[in-house]
Image 1 (tube, rainbow, N blue to C red):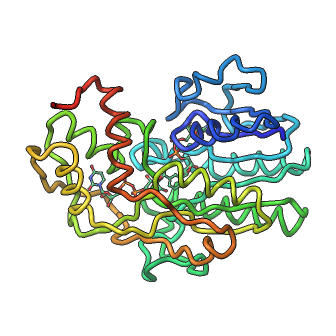
Image 2: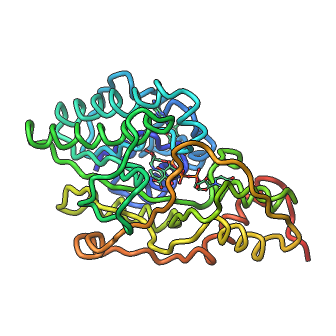
Image 3: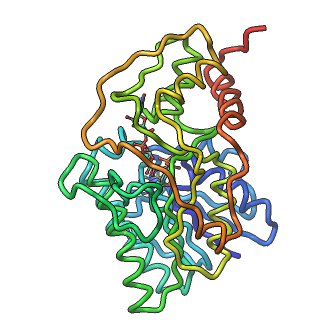
Length: 314
Ligand SMILES: NC(=O)c1ccc[n+]([C@@H]2O[C@H](COP(=O)([O-])OP(=O)(O)OC[C@H]3O[C@@H](n4cnc5c(N)ncnc54)[C@H](O)[C@@H]3O)[C@@H](O)[C@H]2O)c1
Ligand SMILES: O=C(O)[C@H]1O[C@H](OP(=O)(O)OP(=O)(O)OC[C@H]2O[C@@H](n3ccc(=O)[nH]c3=O)[C@H](O)[C@@H]2O)[C@H](O)[C@@H](O)[C@@H]1O
């Protein structure tokens, strides 16, 4: 199978490449502009006969003969996707248009990594795929939230109009090794702060909730979706829901009991609750997450200790 992974140098993408490369029948091509990802995440595959890495921005057309496209190219951290909002929405709209054009041209099946942010600040909880969402069309997060919604629209229009084989995953908060240490997302922030002995920065009100999926579960779900017969959209996430204060207390307990927890200001339009309804995911993909937060955090801690050079206290 010839597989293109856009955004494959990123956090989820590089773990996906690892799993795809385990299958000797697969040839993998990564296209990435290294905005938030890096070659180092793929170092073990560079030079491998079944692997190719291209520096490419998906807002420009790309022509490669492939059978499957995993379209992950988009900055995921709010800090990065808010850094250049016009670029973020271009990546989601023009980038997805280019990948759909490629899929049509070469007859490839295409999977889009959409997001729970399509539900916005949800008024329905937990969120089923049938929920249309509560999204601000002109807010500071809209480049991402609406960008992903348009990407889903384009996927379905190409499916209905041109018969393209599509798969849509609505990914919920995912964590694990290889996350950018300073990309500003809550799990990476808290673990880096705990290891550096800095106060954990809980953004107000602290009662807002998220549900965290470990990256190996996420990759398993994405491959099952691609290999299955269902277009989606399908939620892929761990229904274990925590407040940010509970998350901070767990990181403090597991990693550094002496660290302080500080309440700090939040940013506009931060969703107050988020939890996937995975009824469809279990029924259609036979998937559910295996790694609990308390088991996943130490795996990420080990990765961050190595990268930060912080040894575990005896
Ligand atoms: N991690 C999460 O919690 C989460 C949750 C929901 C959805 N997602 C989605 O999953 C995908 C991967 O997320 P991630 O956490 O690995 O993020 P990431 O930022 O680590 O990876 C994104 C990758 O895409 C690349 N990229 C960005 N813009 C590009 C462009 N214009 N052209 C080519 N490459 C580009 C980046 O350099 C990076 O390698 C994204 O589409 C994201 O929206 C992630
Ligand atoms: O799962 C999803 O669909 C989305 O999850 C995250 O978006 P978000 O939940 O905003 O991610 P974080 O920036 O990690 O924030 C999570 C919560 O933690 C809080 N937070 C964040 C950082 C911090 O240091 N402290 C803190 O309390 C935020 O206010 C927010 O309530 C990802 O960044 C998005 O790419 C993704 O689409």
